[in-house]
Amino acid sequence: MDAFTLTVASALAGTIMCCSMGLLYLASSRRVCLFDWALAGLFFALNMILGACALKYGLKHFLVPAFGNMFYIAGHYGVLAGLRRHLGLGPRWDILAVLASAVFCAHLVPAVQASVVCRVALFTPAIVLINLSAAWLLWRHPARETRLSFLPMIVLELFFLAQQSLRALLIVYGERIDPAFVAGHDLQTWGTLFVLVFLSVATMSCALIVTHDQALALKRASLTDVLTGWLNRRALHDIATRAFRRTRRGSEAIHFITFDIDYFKSINDRYGHGVGDAAICHVTRLAANALRGNDALFRIGGEEFAVLVSGSSLPHVRGIAGRLRELVAASKLDIDGHQVRMTVSVGVAALGAGDGKWEDILRRADEALYHAKQHGRNRVSVHGVDLPGWQAGPRAQAMAG
View 1: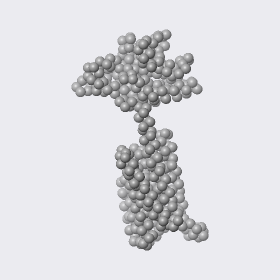
View 2: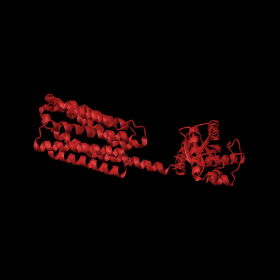
View 3: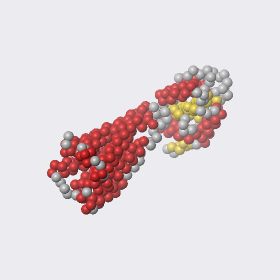
View 4: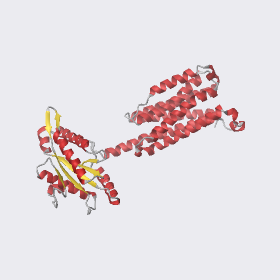
C-alpha cells in the first residue's frame, strides 16, 4: 500500500476515533475524558488530511509541516489528557497550548523549514515523552481491578514510542546506516502505517477503559446501599464468605460488630422519614470515623448495621465498639431546626471453634445486640462475656435472618 493510501486510511481512522468517542460522550456526558479523546481523534485526522493534501498536490509551504506537526503532537497529547481526566487528574490542556506554540515558532526558523531531519530531531522527544507519560500514568495506578483494562493502552503507548524512536534514529543517522537497509524501508510509509495501527487500537483501548469502568461502577452500585454508601447484604455474603475461608486456612481472627439506633421508630414518627434518613446518615458517618479503614461496613436493615473486623483481638474489637457508642451518644443531629440526640446499642461476637459458617458469628453478634437492648440500650454487649450461654429470642432470630 502506497503512502498516500495509508495517509487517507489514517485520516479515516482518526475521524472514526473522533466520531465514536464523541458519540459515547453524548451518550454519557459525565465521562468528559471521551471528549478529550474525541479531540485527539480530530487532531490526528487533521494531521493526516494535511499530509494527504501535501502528497497529492505537492504542497511545499512551511505552514503545512508546521500545522501538521502541531496537530500530530496535539493528537498524542489528547490521548494523555483523556487518561489524566479519567484518573481524576487535570487534563492540563494549557501544557499543549505552550507546546503547540513552541512547535509553530520552531517552524519559523529557516533551518527547521528546510530540513526534515531537523524537525524529526526536535519534535520526536516531545512525542516520546507524551507516550511514556501516558504509559507510566496507567501503570502506576494503584487500583488492581482496573489495571487489566489499562494494559492494551500501556502496550500500545510503549510500542509506539519504541517505533517512533527507532524511526527517528533511522532518519537522523541515516547517512551512517547501510543505504541498502534504509532504501528497503520507506520511512514515511512505515510511519503512516504505525499511525493507522495506533489510531485503530487507541480507539478500542479508550472504549475498553470507559466500558470497564462503567461495569465496575454498576457492580459497586449493586453492592452498595444508596442512602449511606455502606455495603449491602449481597456484599456482606460475598465478603464474609471470603473472610471466613481465609480464616479457616490460616489463624486470623474475625469478629462481627452489630449495632442499631435506639428508639429509631419514634424519630421517624415524630420528625418524619426525611429526618429519619438524615439520622441514619449521621450515625453511619460517625461510625465510619470510629472504625478502621480496612473494616467492611454493611447496612443490613433499616437502622441496623454490621461491621466485619479481621485480624484483631476481642478486647481491641470491644474497644472499637465502645468508641462507636460513645461517639454517637456525644453527637447530636441538627436538622430543620430540630436537635435530635441518638444512641446505639452494640453487639460483638468472635469466631468460635465450632463455627461452620460466618452466619454463626453474625447470629451471636445479633444476640449480643438484643441483650444490650434488653439491658438498658446505649451499651455494648459481648457474646461469651456479657451473656454466656444466652439464647436468642424471637427478635434476635429475625435479625439474624
